[in-house]
Amino acid sequence: MATPLPTTATLTTPPSSHAAMRENFANLRAFLAGLLGADGLTSTALATLGALMAAHVACAAATTVAVDDRGKLIACSGTWALTLPSAVSAAAGWCIVVRNSGTGAITVTPVAPTLIDGAATLQIAAGRTVIVVCTGTDFFSLPFFPRTIAAKRILGNSTAAAGAPQELTATQLTAMLGAFSDTAAGVVPATGGAAAAFLRGDGTWTTENLMLLDATQTVAGIKRFSGSGAFVLSGRAADPTTPEAGQIWHDAATGHIKAFVGNESRVLDGQSAIPMLVPVSGEYAMTTVGCGGGALGAAAGYANRMDLFPYVPRADMAVAALAVNCTAAMGGALGKFVIYASDAAGRPAALLIETATVDLSATGVKEAAHGGMSCEQDAPTGSVSATPAQRRFRRGQSRRHPTSTAVLLRPARGRHCSASAPSPLPQQPTGGGARPRSPPRRRPQSGSSFEQGDAAMATELDFDTVDLNSPALSAFSVTPSDTVDLAAPVRAVTIGTAAGVVKYTHARTGAVCTTGPLPVGTHSIWARRIWATGTTATGLTGWE
Picture 1 (cartoon, rainbow, N blue to C red):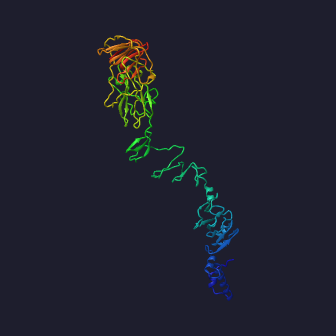
Picture 2 (tube, one colour):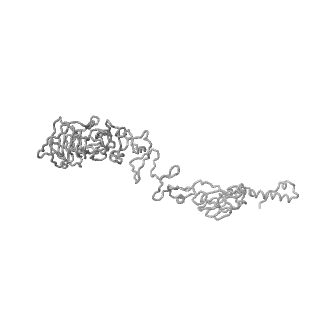
Picture 3 (spheres, rainbow, N blue to C red):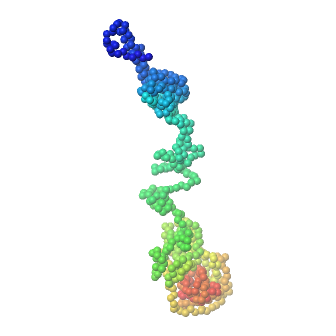
């Protein structure tokens, strides 16, 4: 039991006897010895006063700390519980230092219902040290941060409850955080890969397998990116202001992939449909044209045209027919198709073909008569070209080829469009003119024939031949199976009594052309030789 300090009166009032004085001095000594120790050493005095860590106690088994153990450093080893005294008896300010010097876990346990750090227990991991302080009602801990930790360790708490940090092993770490995914944090990839590949700077995960960000990435040597997915270029609202040579981007406004090559921003070729191959339903071309974009009826009195260029086919193709759908008829209106090749820059070059005129004075599909055309891919410019076909003509001789077979046509000399405009459209006859008359008839000479290079396309015909060589003639007529060699090209023919088919030799190209069924009336053609086929073409007449 501690000796209290004698009162001042006891020590200053003269004692009644010598024995009383000795008792007073004995009580004073006992008080000082109980407070500072009896040996006069500072360490003893500090330990007796309960100074923090002035005394050291080693424990290897479960122990209950006494109030008098105040300030002691209790070194524990093993795995067991260290029980604290009552907080009320320990009083506010009471403290001890607990060090786990072993390899197990020491559990500091207050007497219920007292708590430590708001929990029923505090676990101290191996190698860790904490100061336990009493508030008079509860306890709290002040952990020491370790000066060193084991190699390749992370401080953390792998338990399910709150506790002091401990050195986590790799097994504890992966068990606690697990494999990362796009919905949860993690430290290692899942077996076989994971949906989320990279951790962003903002703490979120990305599913991209490759991220270049905005920094310039230099890859040395030859590298290959492979995978089953597509390489996606995000669309740009506008082209780069100062693109670098070889830069590629996606123009979101036009939907094109572009590249900066040759000091120019260029659209990579092959992204647009070939004109007229995939027309709008019900139309022949991928556009509807007229005078200034209006109806064709607004073009009365002067010519109008539709340009489809650059027309660069990306594969060999054959054009067997050219047609226009006339939706608004105009009296006396005529039209024709004129096709040019294209140069390396996609501009019109040589004149390839000029068809006969088509009658636009009535609505309906109007097919232009021509000898056919073959468009081929031409390296390196990709311009339109025509495949030549050998032809030899002999006066007064004829041979017909099937109308279902296209005749490939190429002019003997190509001309630039700036120096060779299409021939002017003929004027429709408005009445009057010389009266048609029947020419003299004669039988062809034996063995006569019209020869063409591809003899397999021809079949023999026997018909009457009629020569009209007088330039003064202003009109002619042809009956079925008759043929007329003209001194000058004709511009129009008239079918008088019944619908029929007209076959003729084109005045400019020399191509043998066959019209579709023509109704009664006047029709525009441009012919040097003309004849009727079938028995329905009666009363056929023509104007030079």
